[in-house]
Length: 274
Length: 305
Image 1 (cartoon, rainbow over the protein chains, first blue to last red):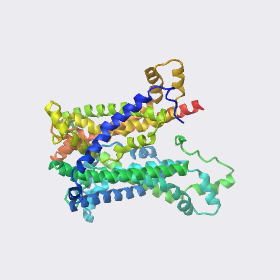
Image 2: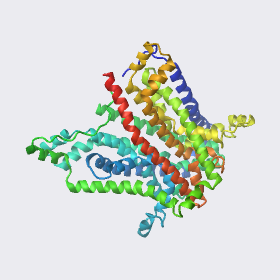
Image 3: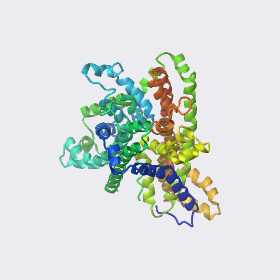
């Protein structure tokens, strides 16, 4: 599927030109403006803005809750993907469609409903409160909504790989004397690691940026339940634009590292499959 | 690049000679207790994570009766304005990204040029930027602390804390959707029909409207639906640039949050139920259109062979 000659089909210049201008104006220049603003601070001021104990606590919380949620999603995603591909049961198509809900449901709705479900007198919170578990307005609450928003990723990356797995591989393992569990551990699971890892990275990246759902369910206590995007908001409301830009720059740094990691994972899994 | 064929369900194992079918069946099938445990777990996970929250939205929205539900939706001028604003901002942002998506996909799928790989990566860039940061960058450019913001205000243009900034922030966070959907579709369809039309004397735009658009229409629609769902539901980015002025810059998700902050839970859930319905409609459309996208690209591929 190679490209055609630029003389054979029109519109190369127009298409590429428009795409580049739009990309530059809408994405690249604004992001550059953020970096320039942050750079206007000078190294020591930058650190004083973006590397304070409060900011570090916010980064740790953001990364920590996102990692925890992504890890939970790997386990949930493997179970759900396996079930959806391997078994037949009533309502399977509905369950399969429901997996995509977190992608389509506005995050504000997710935050609103999760907060109301997990408060001590909510539908689910009433069962947790006697156990001493406070799910709403705590770090656990943040992890909960991040599990929701990141739920589809692992399912949707693992599912196609499981579907493409041919029965012969498993039959061969069985004929060679492997038990069902050994076949899973040694033959199937290794093939699921790359897609699960991609799904993990996608869910993690989604969690790192999440804001809409989190602000409903966190108490926004400094050092405790304040995620990094909230700190940016606080700085903005104080008109500390450069400080906000500095914290945003740190977050952008995290994001780009993640983007690079995801691209690398996808490249590797493609190479292994193809 | 070899595009992998659309994933199809694995063919059911042919009932071979009854003799050796049994051990082989056991090799690919899990014992019943594993099956039932995993099915139970899946129902539990999806139920607790997705189904219960969905149901709870509608239950809480209508808890005080359908009359109150309806009043909550239509009686409040600020809520009505939020619905109106979302219905303006989302389509404009989607339209901007459709034009970009078509232009970028045309260049990327039909031609080879230096920096093509880089461009593909850059298209994904907004996905990895936190929505709050996406909003912040526009405040930094168009805010009144910035020269451009001041200049625009002096010439009578309000960008930040006004609909233009809402559109920009929304377009930023939904930037990749259409392009990402279109590039693989356009690549799968291939240039043959366009080349044929060209040799028969079609002009560039004739070729585009009569050959390319019909060939990619399902993929395009699919991208528009995903983009629109995200645009209407966007929270973080518009939260930052809106200034949250009641009755002026509150979109539907922002209005939900404000109602909830004001402890008006039934009203918050009433508006949230509308957003939820929109999300469910999106998912139904997605399920309907997905096979058509696959069909169209598959048909194009067999025609090319």
